Image (cartoon, rainbow, N blue to C red; front, side, top):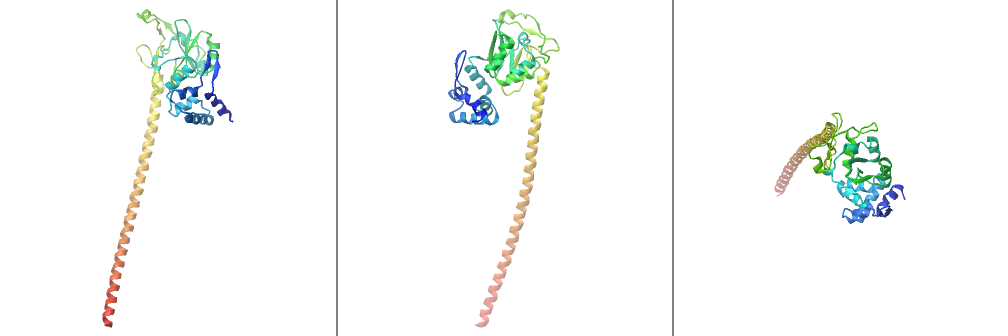
Length: 292
């Protein structure tokens, strides 16, 4: 058995961890109605060939959405699931991890909860990833599961710096800080703002903003480039389709004209043959009359 298939076959057995029994992802997908046994086997075969994880295959094939998968993974690991629209970034939390660390672990520290624990968002919990987060941030962390594109967009943004230290934030208390139980933070002019809303799955970027909700220029530039590249590609494809259709129309017109000319020639030949036959018949009649 190939190693890839062996790895993917873990999706159909059960594992134990410190919280008890963790049901296999494949079982949860079947129980949730996203897969049947036949599709699960197909997903395992695809994963063995491509090296993708089971969840990645299921989302790519359109059998479940990223949000569906995130909810299932949260249930599997006994963690909280956080909707994209509910994700906000706190400056103190962001200062706990550099971009390199966040990228390596595919995780983002997003908040400090009321107990002082760091809330860390990740798309795919694993034992190794959780152990590394505990080693880096300490035992007081609260891991939550979000959709993968939300993590990817956060890692592409300017929320974290590259030099091993995060952006410096200057906290301030708004008038309603006590009412909502959470203080806001204000970044310096050169830093990214602290409260961000993650766009829905169809959007490949995170909307980093202050309370007013203005996205950063970096994010807009990235989206603009993505849209421009996509539109250019579609336009090129449409142009190619039009060119091929025009060439096909010209070939068809030429073929139709050729067939019409050939049919006309055959009609002429048949008419000539008819005249010849009539002439021969008349000659035969004249010959018969001369014998009489």
